[in-house]
Image (tube, helix red, strand yellow):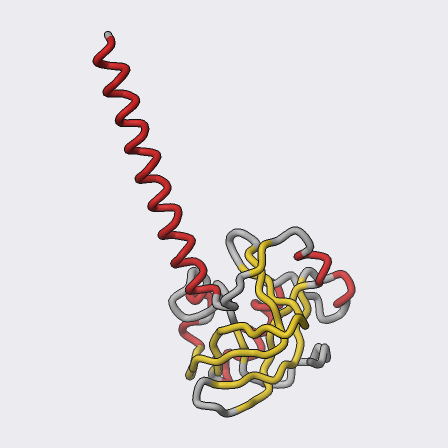
Length: 168
Protein backbone atom coordinates (compact mmCIF):
# COMPACT_ATOMS: atom_id res chain seq x y z
CA UNK A 1 0.00 0.00 0.00
CA UNK A 2 1.16 3.45 -0.87
CA UNK A 3 0.54 6.52 1.29
CA UNK A 4 0.79 9.14 -1.45
CA UNK A 5 -1.74 11.85 -0.67
CA UNK A 6 -2.75 13.36 -3.96
CA UNK A 7 -5.99 14.18 -5.66
CA UNK A 8 -5.45 11.75 -8.54
CA UNK A 9 -8.92 10.50 -9.49
CA UNK A 10 -9.23 6.93 -8.30
CA UNK A 11 -12.22 4.96 -7.09
CA UNK A 12 -12.66 4.63 -3.34
CA UNK A 13 -12.61 1.42 -1.33
CA UNK A 14 -14.94 1.84 1.65
CA UNK A 15 -15.56 -0.72 4.36
CA UNK A 16 -17.74 0.93 7.02
CA UNK A 17 -20.32 3.65 7.41
CA UNK A 18 -19.70 5.04 3.90
CA UNK A 19 -20.81 1.84 2.14
CA UNK A 20 -24.12 1.86 0.29
CA UNK A 21 -26.80 1.00 2.83
CA UNK A 22 -24.79 2.24 5.81
CA UNK A 23 -25.44 5.44 7.83
CA UNK A 24 -23.03 7.78 6.01
CA UNK A 25 -23.82 6.81 2.41
CA UNK A 26 -26.01 9.94 2.17
CA UNK A 27 -22.82 12.06 2.16
CA UNK A 28 -22.07 11.01 -1.39
CA UNK A 29 -25.02 8.96 -2.67
CA UNK A 30 -25.94 11.52 -5.38
CA UNK A 31 -22.37 11.56 -6.72
CA UNK A 32 -21.92 7.80 -7.07
CA UNK A 33 -21.59 6.64 -10.65
CA UNK A 34 -21.20 2.95 -9.81
CA UNK A 35 -20.24 0.57 -7.02
CA UNK A 36 -19.40 -3.09 -6.58
CA UNK A 37 -18.45 -5.45 -3.80
CA UNK A 38 -14.75 -5.90 -3.21
CA UNK A 39 -12.15 -6.77 -0.60
CA UNK A 40 -8.65 -5.77 0.33
CA UNK A 41 -5.93 -8.18 1.44
CA UNK A 42 -3.44 -7.99 4.28
CA UNK A 43 -5.55 -5.70 6.44
CA UNK A 44 -7.42 -6.02 9.71
CA UNK A 45 -10.71 -4.46 10.80
CA UNK A 46 -11.49 -3.28 14.34
CA UNK A 47 -14.72 -2.18 16.04
CA UNK A 48 -14.42 1.43 17.27
CA UNK A 49 -18.06 1.47 18.40
CA UNK A 50 -19.91 3.51 15.81
CA UNK A 51 -17.49 2.87 12.97
CA UNK A 52 -14.65 0.52 12.04
CA UNK A 53 -10.93 1.13 11.73
CA UNK A 54 -8.90 -0.76 9.15
CA UNK A 55 -5.16 -1.21 9.67
CA UNK A 56 -2.43 -2.55 7.41
CA UNK A 57 -0.97 -5.97 7.95
CA UNK A 58 -1.95 -9.04 9.97
CA UNK A 59 -2.65 -11.10 6.84
CA UNK A 60 -6.44 -10.76 7.04
CA UNK A 61 -8.83 -9.26 4.53
CA UNK A 62 -11.52 -6.59 4.76
CA UNK A 63 -14.82 -6.67 2.88
CA UNK A 64 -16.19 -3.48 1.39
CA UNK A 65 -17.21 -1.72 -1.80
CA UNK A 66 -15.49 0.02 -4.67
CA UNK A 67 -17.18 3.37 -5.31
CA UNK A 68 -16.72 5.26 -8.58
CA UNK A 69 -17.74 8.91 -8.51
CA UNK A 70 -19.10 11.22 -11.16
CA UNK A 71 -16.28 13.46 -12.43
CA UNK A 72 -18.04 16.71 -11.52
CA UNK A 73 -18.26 15.65 -7.85
CA UNK A 74 -14.82 14.15 -7.39
CA UNK A 75 -12.78 16.99 -5.82
CA UNK A 76 -15.55 18.08 -3.44
CA UNK A 77 -16.23 14.53 -2.28
CA UNK A 78 -12.51 13.85 -1.85
CA UNK A 79 -12.25 16.92 0.40
CA UNK A 80 -15.42 15.97 2.29
CA UNK A 81 -14.18 12.43 2.92
CA UNK A 82 -10.74 13.65 4.01
CA UNK A 83 -12.50 15.92 6.52
CA UNK A 84 -14.84 13.14 7.72
CA UNK A 85 -11.92 10.76 8.22
CA UNK A 86 -9.75 13.35 9.95
CA UNK A 87 -7.13 13.26 7.20
CA UNK A 88 -5.09 16.37 6.47
CA UNK A 89 -3.20 15.86 3.18
CA UNK A 90 -0.86 18.73 4.09
CA UNK A 91 -0.03 17.22 7.49
CA UNK A 92 -0.68 13.47 7.35
CA UNK A 93 1.43 12.93 10.48
CA UNK A 94 -1.26 14.77 12.50
CA UNK A 95 -4.16 12.85 10.97
CA UNK A 96 -6.43 10.29 12.64
CA UNK A 97 -6.61 8.25 9.45
CA UNK A 98 -4.39 8.17 6.39
CA UNK A 99 -5.71 8.15 2.84
CA UNK A 100 -3.65 5.63 0.92
CA UNK A 101 -3.59 3.99 -2.48
CA UNK A 102 -4.38 0.31 -2.12
CA UNK A 103 -4.71 -2.76 -4.32
CA UNK A 104 -8.32 -3.97 -4.18
CA UNK A 105 -9.87 -7.18 -5.50
CA UNK A 106 -13.42 -7.13 -6.84
CA UNK A 107 -15.72 -10.07 -6.19
CA UNK A 108 -15.57 -10.71 -9.95
CA UNK A 109 -11.82 -11.33 -9.51
CA UNK A 110 -10.45 -8.14 -11.05
CA UNK A 111 -7.83 -6.01 -9.31
CA UNK A 112 -7.58 -2.25 -9.26
CA UNK A 113 -6.06 0.62 -7.34
CA UNK A 114 -8.29 2.74 -5.08
CA UNK A 115 -8.14 5.30 -2.32
CA UNK A 116 -8.95 4.00 1.15
CA UNK A 117 -8.54 5.23 4.69
CA UNK A 118 -6.48 3.31 7.25
CA UNK A 119 -6.08 3.94 10.94
CA UNK A 120 -2.81 4.07 12.78
CA UNK A 121 -1.91 0.91 14.70
CA UNK A 122 -1.77 2.88 17.95
CA UNK A 123 -5.52 3.60 17.61
CA UNK A 124 -6.50 -0.08 17.76
CA UNK A 125 -4.37 -1.45 20.59
CA UNK A 126 -7.33 -2.04 22.93
CA UNK A 127 -10.03 -2.64 20.33
CA UNK A 128 -11.69 -5.91 19.42
CA UNK A 129 -10.88 -7.18 15.94
CA UNK A 130 -13.74 -7.99 13.60
CA UNK A 131 -12.69 -11.50 12.62
CA UNK A 132 -14.94 -11.67 9.55
CA UNK A 133 -13.46 -8.41 8.20
CA UNK A 134 -17.03 -7.45 7.27
CA UNK A 135 -18.45 -4.36 9.04
CA UNK A 136 -22.03 -4.75 7.71
CA UNK A 137 -22.19 -8.39 8.85
CA UNK A 138 -20.62 -7.47 12.19
CA UNK A 139 -23.16 -4.69 12.81
CA UNK A 140 -26.07 -7.00 11.96
CA UNK A 141 -24.76 -9.59 14.42
CA UNK A 142 -24.11 -6.88 17.03
CA UNK A 143 -27.63 -5.48 16.59
CA UNK A 144 -29.19 -8.93 16.92
CA UNK A 145 -27.13 -9.57 20.07
CA UNK A 146 -28.21 -6.25 21.62
CA UNK A 147 -31.87 -6.87 20.71
CA UNK A 148 -31.74 -10.33 22.30
CA UNK A 149 -30.05 -8.90 25.38
CA UNK A 150 -32.73 -6.21 25.76
CA UNK A 151 -35.49 -8.81 25.42
CA UNK A 152 -33.87 -10.92 28.14
CA UNK A 153 -33.48 -7.88 30.41
CA UNK A 154 -37.15 -6.96 29.84
CA UNK A 155 -38.28 -10.50 30.72
CA UNK A 156 -36.19 -10.48 33.91
CA UNK A 157 -37.50 -7.01 34.83
CA UNK A 158 -41.12 -8.01 34.17
CA UNK A 159 -40.68 -11.15 36.30
CA UNK A 160 -39.13 -9.07 39.07
CA UNK A 161 -42.00 -6.55 38.97
CA UNK A 162 -44.64 -9.31 39.05
CA UNK A 163 -42.91 -10.94 42.03
CA UNK A 164 -42.57 -7.60 43.83
CA UNK A 165 -46.20 -6.62 43.07
CA UNK A 166 -47.55 -9.96 44.34
CA UNK A 167 -45.78 -9.46 47.70
CA UNK A 168 -47.55 -6.17 48.37
